[in-house]
Image (tube, rainbow, N blue to C red; front, side, top):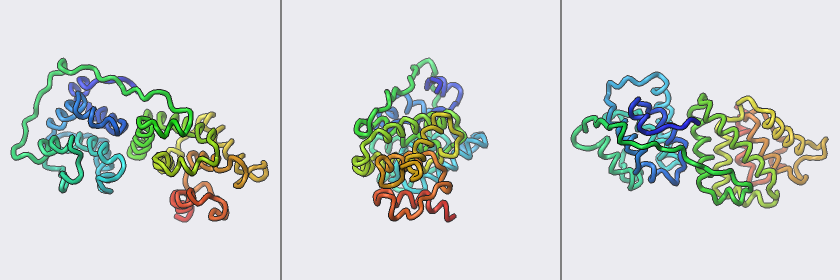
Length: 295
């Protein structure tokens, strides 16, 4: 992604850049970012809003999509990130959280109350661009080389969940699409290299949530690179009895996990799944793939 600064976002009213940042930011760092220059820039753009603000059609659609996600509950994964992005498109008087003290973290509650529920309307506060410094793009570091290392890397775990949710919300964003596809390749490689007997343990942790978020994102419908095609075909071959593979053979569960990352739900079916698919994977497979085959 191209680098950008909060001063540039404020000067040009580029709230879309800040919304994208919040949706993709590591969840562990939200409080730090909000209490710093990025939060200041975001609040400045929120204060510029009123009921007559000329949002574009794309911004209105994004706001509607974000609100649909919030309606699932503020206790859902990534709800806080989605909320911060939604603020940027929500004028005072057109957005309200019921019992915010119950749902919002302590670091966000006072700002929400000031922006949306204080007794008097706050005037738009001009912020000098020269007073704001450049904000570098977050450095996520190299992707871990094993599931064990990935499990302890909160930044990468949050990045996986954030990108999956961001792509689900806005699949037309080419940069997010390409980044998520790269992440899928890296994730597939470490799944492939993992001892099959250890997979159930790993997928009972936060890794399982990240995996299913990626599967449900819809990234499978995108055109694949040669590297993606190779990963997919290698997984297929390891699941084919005619090629010496199939469930019950070494590496079959690894291959099945990888296959679900590349097959569009509704295009892959396991005959006698109850007998072949491990019990810890069966419900997820049935929910995402079997239901799509029926619908």
